Amino acid sequence: MKRKLIGLLLCVAMTATMLSGCGSKGDAPADAPAADAPAEAPAESSDDAEADADAPAASGDVITIGFAQVGHESDWRTASTKSCQDVFSAENGYDLQFVDCDNDSAVQLEAVRGFIEQDVDYIIIDPIVSTGWDTVLTECEDAGIPVIIIDRTIEDSDKYVSWVGSNFKTEGLAAGEWLKAYAAEKGITEINALVIEGSTGASATIGRTEGFKEIADREGWTIVDSQSGDFTQDGGAEVMESYCKSYEGKFNVVVCQNDNEAFGAMDAMKQAGVSYGVNGDVILISFDACTAGLEFVKSGDINADFECNPLAAPFVEEVIKTLASGGTPEKEVYMEEHWFVNEDIISSIEVNGETQNLTVVTDDIIAAQY
Ligand code: GZL
Image 1 (cartoon, helix red, strand yellow):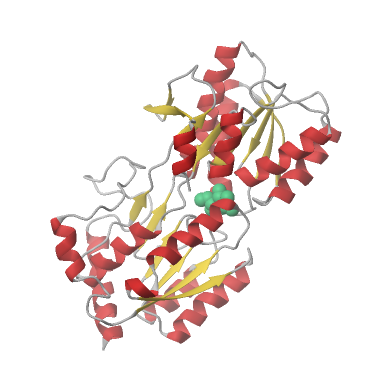
Image 2: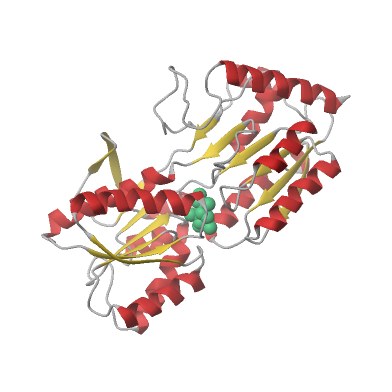
């Protein structure tokens, strides 16, 4: 009975979504907030209290959730997993079936099919890569199981109820706009950048690469090389070691597409006698802004760190509550994020025509980070 009710609610929600014109990514309805206007963290209110009364677990039934997670490659990933485990806990009325897919797309597809076999109530997916999803999402739809995507995006299907995450291209654009303003302040007229990309095929990699390259092309910078470090510390170290050998003295910027790659790149540059950071020869840019990353920003080892918020679970629970009460969740929910810097020499940057503030890292900010 529960399956049929959820299936019916899902059909109503999907139909309503199509009718409201936000049937696919980027087709924001007229009244939608700006493309990546960040969603406020869900806060309890009287309406929420009412919604809580209809909370999926309020009926006393345990809600089973299948969560196919990318892997365990980074501090960011650890925080993302913990966010889901904290919200979808037994004491909150959930049975979380968690699969760490170890960055293996075949394992991830198999995990989703396993959730269908288990007849879970909801499926959460953080897609390792952005393509190859339509078949298995059709199977979820046929089984009447609502799917919620978090973090990375899916480009070849919109058979899911909602996506909760970040605008990766905006993160890349912000890094480029910051570098332009920072170089001007420092009197640096020539930029020769080395990029350590994230995992190949991941939308986070695609977006950050695209955004930064757009600014580099506009400003006439040289991207000396761009290779994948697979979002890991070892990967960052390996690529940076090779870069130091191949491009000695030919680069003055390193862009790491996550903090763990930056940690590895720092080790490799130290080994090679290359100075980096606020007082070094090489400007070091990173993404994610995990706690350890911000500690390196505060110390001046990393010049700027562009946050990607991993704490999606509270927003996913809001989607589930909306569905369970017969409502139509937003198709896209953007997370709030900040751009962190060491020096207080630029207060804001213009990204896509929008003024975005820069945040100088303090001990309080580090203490509150994920
Ligand atoms: C981005 C996320 C990326 C992080 C990395 O949303 O998918 O994957 O930037 C993580 O740290 O490995």
